[in-house]
Length: 366
Image (cartoon, rainbow, N blue to C red):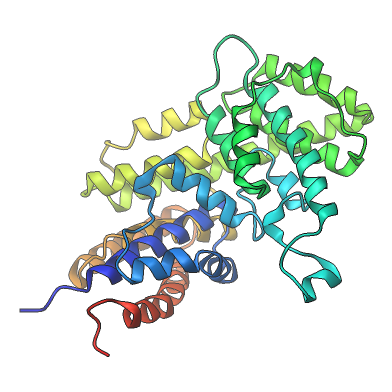
């Protein structure tokens, strides 16, 4: 009888697959450099799993999402996260030291710390002002705020203080003197994105417009930020709906994995109403819908699905079934050849990481 795999290697596989799932969902791009960069950032977690610790996986819910958002901050901030552009503009201590200073230390300068503390706190307050318009807090408000605060990379006590700070109304926000027009526009894009999480968000958008005028940005710049946010939300919706449908189709006979993977993917890629519509169809059998995707988005969807498939460590026979479905899903997404490329990319990332983990396993031969 074939011996079972080492439990610690299975734990490592689960951690790596879920990290690959998150990174590809975060960027809507299947990119091995991004996967390797995330593995490097998460080396402590991966090594711990290889030595027998419990896996750090999506089953842990929102705390896992927050940890991965922070890990992705210096690589490629999650596109679904309001204020992702703010982090991409360098407003994060997760980037470490920059310029000549990086030759001597990984610690950011006091100037960078002060900048992130001031402008990062302002971005968090803007997000809070938009997400708490009206009497009822929005369902995703806390997760969005936690992801942004974690991505700033401030000390733990300052993160806790920002998270516990009561939200302020848009009209009472004070604009930092060192807020550049470029960063102001990035903050407005993030605020408009947050306003659209539940649909049109008319009251929320009015709050963003008020903040925009307070920053001193010209009206055309504010309008442009609104348009950019809307296009980003629509692109995310297209990606999210295709991914949920593909996961439903490929894993139709595995309800637990299907629910976990599709539910997590919908949570981090789709606005609330679109998420409800997509997840309501999860238990429906039948073929996939046709989805018109460009090559990059199609490969990302297929990469997300294959990372999800491999997290359960399927047998070779089971894998053959799933390969056939994965290829069929690719055809419905507009490109049969993309399935093989996506599988190769995910497996080329996993194999060396797992081989290294095997050497660290407690019961591995020495």
